[in-house]
Image (tube, rainbow, N blue to C red; front, side, top):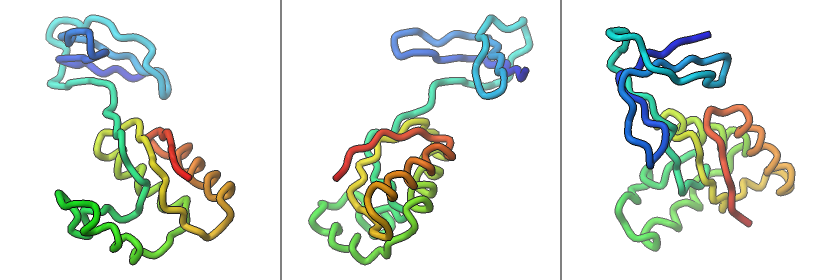
Length: 142
């Protein structure tokens, strides 16, 4: 069992932060959150993962095309220049990028089908990337 000795722990939006807490982790699950022994904490803040409420699971971000802060109509047509990629790789890259940024949940608006296979097969490949990533997805799309 792994122990994290945290100076502060956030557990829910309506709950104030707790000070000096020890989190016991059993495998991949939090087993217990309890008061830490005096003087045992490290300067750590533990909190639930962030949520990314709007993502398209693209391998290339639209900001890479100079789209940051610009109207959709001025850059959307450039997205057609990005070649199709294996759907598993596209989703895995996007979800890994979100996880590295701290997001544990990603709402994927899957609007650009890669077109290498039929849609059910592509959806299974995206789901496989989700199963193997640190982030979890919800989806909305065609």
